[in-house]
Amino acid sequence: MKMFRKITSLGVAAILTVTLTACGSTKSDSGQPAGSNSPKSTAAAAVEKIKISMWSQFSDPNSKDGGFIGFYKALDATKAKFPNVEIEHTGIGGEAYKTKIKTASAANELPDIFFSWGGGFAQPFVAGNRILPLQDLAKDGTIDKLVQGTTDNFTFDNKLYGLPTNIATANLYINTELFQAAGAKVPATWEDLLADINLLKAKNITPIALGAKDRWPAMFWNSILDIRMGGTAAVNATLNKTASFDTPDFQAAGRKYKELIDAKAFGENPLGTSYDESINMFLTGKAAILYMGAWVNGQINAPDSAVKGKVDVVKFPTISGGKGNADEWHGGSGESFFINKDVKNKERVWEVYKYFMETMAKEVYLAGSGSSAWKGDLGDTSKVDPLAVKIGQLSAKATGFSYWWDQMLSGNDTESMFGSLMKFTAGKVTPEEFTKELQSKINPGK
Image (tube, rainbow, N blue to C red):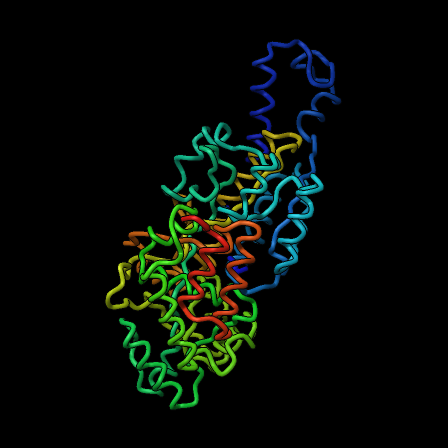
């Protein structure tokens, strides 16, 4: 999906030194006396090489997506940092990646390190004993370097399985040039948004680029409307299977979504446009509004972008009568890399892994795609994408987050959610039927 994020040779030498000292042995790993000047023992300690296999969804090293940029910069930096570690990366794009890692997990053929989402998506890997718990390794000071709450989606039964990279949020992007041409204003309320949609349509401008053909962009709109009507706590309770989808608040959110569909806010055929096509519509000035993750910042402000300098980002409008507020966000920290439980050279892999994760967090932020989940100096931030800077300012006072539904739900629940949402988007069920169907399929009995 969207998708969407971070030791030195001296460190390796230090580890080897500590190991030899702790053992109190008079023999080296090669069988030579400890401290021997034997060329064989010196070479073994200094240049022993290992190979680490890594899979990710970052398939295109030339992508302008901030997440991709950050990933490849972190990968290159890690390779340079550890010359005696060969990282063999395989990138698989889109839904094919999810299929590949699920298949590999079932066959117990996962790579040493692999990209994953947290929440419900990660649960089968945990249940199948496929990934390495990190809580003991992370007591080396790593936990203290993380922003509080950013490991929640990677923690199961009080065990930590992944480190975060970034805090991702879905944001409302508006093309200020198109807004001005239509006489529309930045929407602060739901009524403002509906008025803008009518003004844009009158100028033959598609109001909102959706991309529902790929399903998850429609989920973003449904999710934020649920957040505005019910609040993040209520939404998270349903995703955690402790509350009901079929409530007056979520029914009201469904009616808001239907208002947009009926108003042709997403165009004549909401299901007819893919994610890539919808992004292209926005980037070429054919659509005025985009509700999407910060990973699009790099594309919007790329040197050759037709909308560079013409786009502003704002909080999603408030809705009168809703229990949510403007400082509750769709998003959070939900993407990570996991380490295979059966990985060899665990301690060395951990050192490489944590360096890579922290570096990726920094580079993704510098590429303008989400705030870093790691504390500390981010280096020269003077050239950080202005949209990313503003998103950081807008979300600094966040009072709640609710992460992507397709990652929080697991297995058949995710497919059930998408199936129901697509029927609803196609106008085949009412808002009330939609919430009842979600409840019956995902949270029966709640």
